[in-house]
Image 1: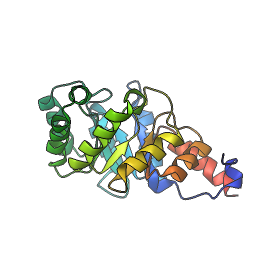
Image 2: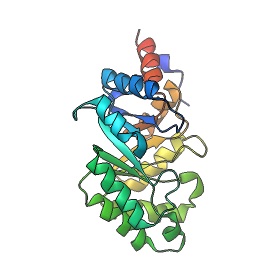
Image 3: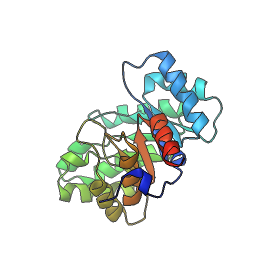
Image 4: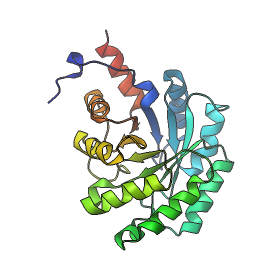
Length: 227
């Protein structure tokens, strides 16, 4: 078990962090302050829902190191594929540079991995990087295996551990996703990621992105650990 952060190698987390702005009660001031902090620290991205997308785009300014990410069919993915595609197209037209997509778990439960992959492939065809949000806590091992292979066949850029509505992500989750992906795509740890030691656990387990609502707090903790 790794020790406290003060005794560990402390990587530069900023290029890994996707700052989440998904709280439906988030006010405009907090959105603007968090976008400013994401640019200040050089986070990989800011992730928000469609009704905040344009406000976040305006605050972040022209595309730069901190990319704007839109969630699609969030949080459960239970909408028709035509609507999911329309959400993705709208996001692309309104400044999104990446998409985090909740897939069609219903088709997967029916053993229709080809339909699961086809829906994702149509969204990937828009030309934006796509992370597929896998609800690992609800997927049995055989279905998770199907989901990973089908998503990679659809040309997704990465796999995300969860949607934040279940148990907190663990290092074991990320090691499992890393093993299943076999280097074919990125791995985003997300869900209940609040502390520096958690973040370091995820990186050590193989995460290439960290989805969290606590990005600025993690950076402050990292800087304290480096002093």
